[in-house]
Image (cartoon, rainbow, N blue to C red; front, side):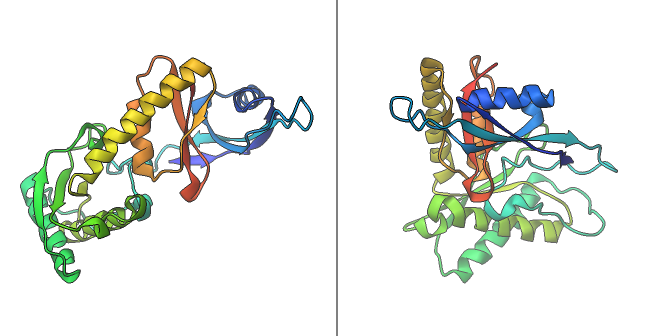
Length: 256
């Protein structure tokens, strides 16, 4: 569990200088703080009207959990309404096999599609590397296939995120346990993963070449997680999320 300490606001000629100054003031490392960029700053015209960059650094204080808990997906995995934990209440039931979980998830998804008057096939698929979560069991992945299914994806995948949340909720309610179920539509998530991975690699090259940080567009948690994972082993750059709510973004910057 994480708690937030008292934040500080710091100025600098650049965002990175402001962050470095704030870290020095707090005596912490970058991964120990939450960074919010208040202003990117401005060079002005011929030095006139220049403004410093401003950032807010909030220390993250780790607190030991009161009791052991089931593994849960990191914040960067959940999409849309799934930011809240999806858990069954009451005593846990015996664990089910992946096939049984898939059967329950398939029935739940089929029922939702029927109520939406959508005719489609539900196909089981293996998870991609970005769908895996640490040492947790691989997720059950169901892909909806058919014609004119864009309505199930929605803007920035928001409808798909809500659909997945609903299926997980039904599965967890029926099984009295937490299971990771991923819902896709005609391979949308796989294609999006490839796009984001290429974007992350291209932006990392830009950061190395220019030695200037890059802030990507606002993304839902699952997509930000893809960017983080795509660059986690990069030798010269690293990433962290900035901003709040729907405006939360990934910043790519040089390793210190």
